Amino acid sequence: QIAQGRESWIVSSSGKDVPGCGTKVSAACASIGYVLQKAPPTSRIMVDGSNTTYTYNVCGFKKPIIWTKSVTIVGILGVPRIGCPWHHESNHLWKFYPDDPQRMISFENIRIQNGRMTVNGRLGLTNATLYNTAIWTDDGCEKFEFEISNVLVERGLDWHGTEATMGPRSPVGSYIECEEIRGSMSSSLFEDVIMEIDAIWYGDLTVTNSNFSKKLAQETGVGGLNITLPWTHGRLEIRNCIFENQVHFEPIYSAVNIESAALRVESRTFTMGRNDVSDVNVTVIDSIFRHNERAISISRTFKHVNIAWCKFHDNFVMHAAAAIRLAISALVVTVKHCEFMNNAAGFNRHQAIPGNFEFDGDQVQITNERINGVISLVGKGGAIRIHKGRVLLHNCTFINNTARLLGGSVFVDRLGEVVMADSYFQNSDSGLIAMQGDILYSSGLVRISNITFDVNVADNHVSILRHGGTHWSMDVTQIYFKCPIGHRLSTVNATSHKIANGEGLLRSHKLDQLYYYCETCNNNQYSLDRGSIRYAVTGNESRPSNVVDIFKVLSSWLYDHHPSFGHSIRWPMSSINFPHILDDIFAL
Image (cartoon, rainbow, N blue to C red; front, side, top):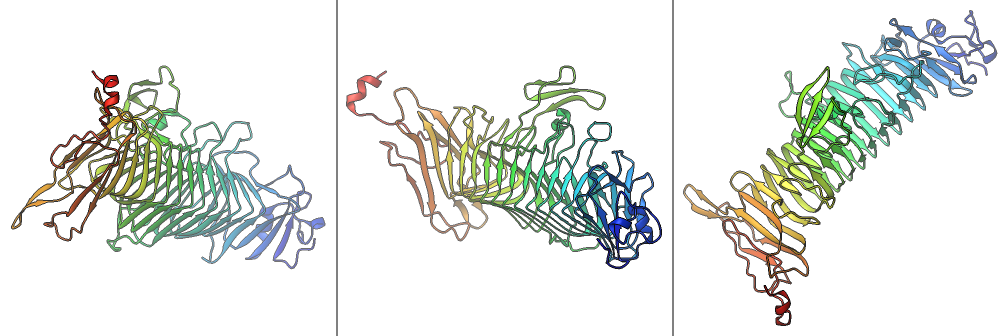
């Protein structure tokens, strides 16, 4: 009970702010503000938490307490509450402006509530709760360091019993912008809040074993983490985290959500004299994204982006890319060992609101004081949309993903490139079929090696794989394609020729266009098995003029069908000539 030396102080709800207070619980000071005025640098303030209904008032309504020295505030005999007694957008708890960059303000075993704390320095939070409380930095912040461990950050009800308002930069949405930011968040839970971090010149951020979720039925924006990294000197690592239920409650915001996501990462677009090549790396590993209005959005310029061993389940968006939206320039973007299930782009989860928010086919009619017009639901890339950049997609599984328009699993734009290897795709069996490219739609560059396309449901006029790009923009070296029972596989491809100066006519297995359809069998034909094709290219194409040695097609159950290669092939793969004993049954 004795505070050791004058570097330790005790504050209690039963104490008094008198000279000499704070040496023990029975002679404690009454307020944290009084101790902050008296305590020397590096003081330790121990706050009595035995009175569970009492709030230690450190609330400055429009005028916060300003503190410049290092201090540690620790809860004893329970978890004390400090802050403002009720929530208001103008509540300020304190501003920490250290007069020495090494000084730090830290909290342990404390509940901080109903206000904003501004920290232009070093911050530590351990075994703490932030209730209706935001972390901000002021303009001119040069260096911010933080360590958040085992912390609950939540948005709740204000004094009057109504839910506290929140936007990306509101009193309960943390906004940290500084020239240099170093920090870590571990083993923490963030509910109904947005952590927005903007590092201008240097950023080194690590997030591990944390959960970003929503539970309140009110508009709180989309995004557990919004991260902006500098052009150079930056790193972000997210490991073993969960992002769930990050959605817009108001349907209007969903209809205009083009790039917001549960995890949104972008880089600054200017160099200001720095190197022209980015050295910023982003890693997302061993994490789960479920029931979000878009899971991940990454844009602008990075060196390496690595997304591995993650699960993307039941994410949705009204426009494009329910799981991952990529619009980046990077040396390497890798998505590997990931699972994509039940993601949907271009579909709506909201109910129509007569006279305010109504559906008309693929369009939404919005009429209110802020927006008056019609918005078309884009619906491209049920799981992944690659706006631009080169993406390596390895050892991934795609099951039951769909899009309203194009690319049920993957959509590749003209400026995008995807290298797909050792992956499995299965289209949706829910009856929701894309207009074209029910699994893959591309107008960019595509490389396919050892890929399985397993088609559960097919429509005669809807392509399962559809690519149309520049010359030799499609390179398929190994593919296994299966159509449903009673269907045959039809292929359209062009072209395998090219004229080169000084070399003449060249031939290659590379294509400009490639379409795969699963069509119902013609009259007098039927499949007793799933229509399928195994296609592999062998040989070494060391120079553009080399001719591929072998085209190998394996299909053990075909009879009297000999595949050929050339321009605009239509190849029925699952037609079977039945034995003579069945001729009468299947005759016209």
